[in-house]
Image (tube, rainbow, N blue to C red; front, side, top):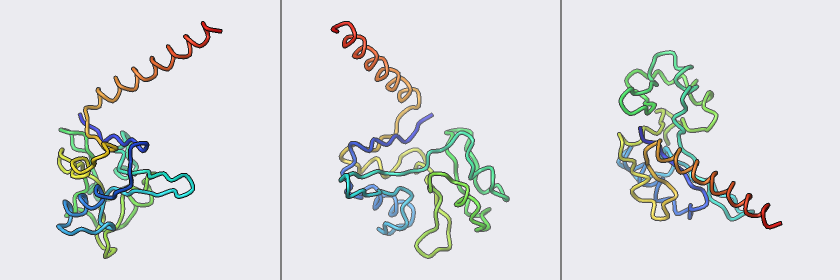
Length: 160
């Protein structure tokens, strides 16, 4: 299973990911119709991308009265089936990440579906702040980083 990984330290705020997403989903370049959002924090001069986290126990799936939002068993991605959606907006309220939203007309619900396994946002992210990688690779990378931090702490303690 693959996951979309966000590294905010690498994000340059160029918004090419937002434009690529909107074009992939709607055929138009419109930042409002993007499933990824770049938040700008001017005090810190920092950009933070937010995307659907594909939660294991996804609230959007739990609250959907028609089953329009469900997890695909093949790739583990939480999909929104527009044909089943009645537009009740319960998924918007339930999502703690703000990842389910309305399109620019305020009529159609949108959420990331990883572009069927080939996310457009990742393809255009030149700073590599966005990556689509195997979940096992992410876990291993985090374990390695933690082990390296522990080794650093151990070296500092032994010095003094």
